[in-house]
Image (cartoon, rainbow, N blue to C red; front, side, top):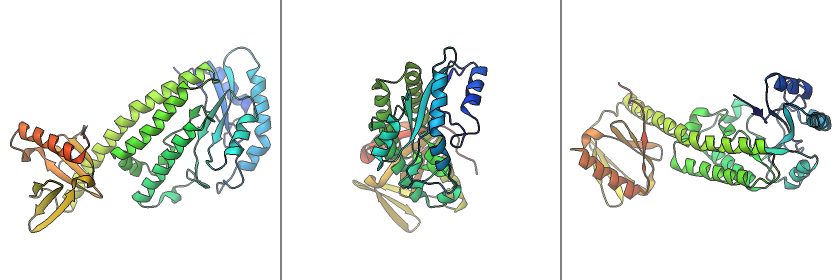
Length: 330
């Protein structure tokens, strides 16, 4: 049962209902705590093609006044005055002034812009290569970590909003260990942020802790599912190209892997391997834009497979991620 809701926008920005209408709906649903968190005003340099910035600037004073009047009332739900601080790394004085303008109970930090570009406006802006998307994801999560360190916000809003218009590509990126490492840094900082709250009211603190715990539980699970999907797709693509099944000879040298298919030979250095995965009866060694797909049946017995797993993890300096799911049948 949901007893608290603290991320809510009114018709002062892009919301559809007034403060009074939203309060009545929260009361009707029996919520114990209801937090209003209208977007903060934005500097002129940060614009969407279709803009509500001027409307918000004109109506923010009224929004804050109405919420504070409701906050003064006794009874349920308990009303909290909040704001989603749109995060602009180069506009620290502007953001500090926005946070100090009213007696807020909590501040949500939300990233909607990378530089002066609003990345969550249209699908057309994401018709780019996967590598370009990867760069944007990395930029976003580094910005998220910086925001959490700032001391200006209490909660990080929608931490995965960057995937809005590129979900499949995001899952491919998420399956890479270095991506999980980057996300984990941002979440660890967010956890430290939660436990360093001094002024935030208890219901918000509890919600924040629950949210971070959920993120730690869900992201690794989502990554494994995404990676399993990627592995199954690798097999399907190889089948379509006529490259699977094929007889491949592997020679594991001191510093590289040499493969031979017919008369063609290629090699990959262990340091070029980006991640290792195991899906049912297969092993996957990913590097660059390709992968070696090795069937478990290629090994004489379980002991030889164990020796291989120990060898390859040692050479590549990373664990094998154990995935779940079936390999598609041709």
